[in-house]
Length: 621
Image (cartoon, rainbow, N blue to C red; front, top):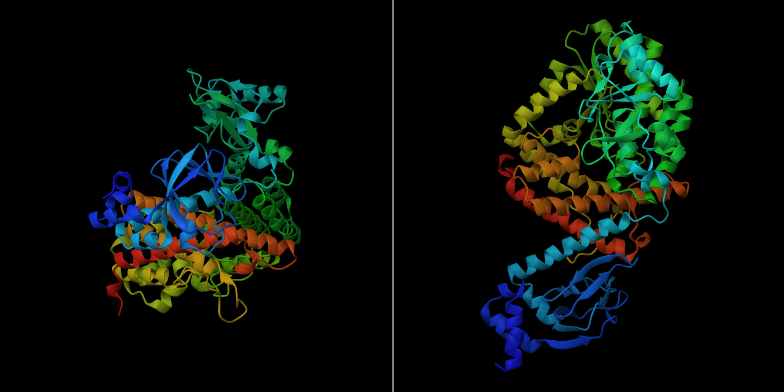
């Protein structure tokens, strides 16, 4: 071998993935390559061009930018660029420029394709694709224009003026201090200056006035101990989500040492941006009629449209939609109890499916149920039938259609005692059939909304104690999870629906978002995890060894990007005066979205293949 070729061979042998090639292949590779030199600042690859070779950095470095100018990565000696252009049709989609004077080895397309026949090399470049997907997920979160409620840090919202009270002071003294300072809350510190609790005006109403507690009681007796806090670098949007999800109005902000810097209140956030979801939730709470509530609910799509164009991920947007739906449900339930009187027996109103997972989109229908205490009488059961009817009708008026499969609290089958619910789940677990489980899977995504949450939690603990050993049940769920293949063809082309009203579109919910949720559900139930949302389920599966950490991260990235495309499509539909749906026409997508969707769908299909190989499909006849 000529000395120059021998040097190139040694270079390849010293860098992944070429070092994993058989000796004969490695020996032959240098003669097939050419050398290219690029001066600092010049273009190596153009985003609108085609790529005919894999370019490996021999010396120097290059930067890779996406179409909006975001730096995807810096590639130095031994790294390569151009993989995407070799695997997909042009244009390439990335701008590659030389950071310094750079020498590159060009591996022609034919040679590159032969290298993919070697497993380690193919796996290496697949990981590069996953990295690109992650960069794409970050790209779509960049705002076109900013909303203050999303971009402001909580540390910029607190004044630094902290009004504190000693826990040994009396309630009367604390109330006088609040009146004097014209504030609605006090921070309670321990002797070392750390946050011990918070005392709010609602604490005084609920724990002192309502219970006729003496005003000589101490602050320590009535305060909220160990309150939820936020770090100083948290965004206002995170404060908003916590307030929505936990129905609280004050959040202490602490420094890295745990010392309070101040408070963020719901009023602060409303003042920051009146069009925020928090303002809408406050409007929900003011409504006294279903018609008024429906008018407020009609503003949800505009809130989503705002969030899509700001620094919010698909996960955060879905959490906001779910929290708004929760608020509307709770208000309707309060209106129902005002009309029919207090519930005659303990109960728990639960939400199911995407709302339970905090993964709602626009246009979703109702999925609800009621768990009743075992002591409920037939007469009391009639009250709950009327109650469920009122809430369900109200949800329809507020823009939440009835479930086509009748999975609603108005259906007597889904309005049962705790013991009856155990029997229903036992039937699914012990004697699963495909027909029975088609509509039953969402019941394993259950979250308590109002009433006695312990009724739901006891039922959940019972179910999760049994799911890891319910192998036939897991096999049926696995079959469902792998049945809906992502819309990507053999040669990585997007496959549209062939008939029906969705013809020539991508069913991005049932063939994109849905399979990821189903994979996560199977994995979580197989390990008995109490997690309900898809992200937490995949993280739990990874921690338990049921899924590799890299595979879980890749699937979460795929889930995020597919969900974002779905939400953006729904927001666009509403903007155009059309009802939101899940059917995305490929010709409405840019090259970036199409290419990244292909990557995301490929990750989902790979995860389905792994799941199908691990779960006990042999239990099914």
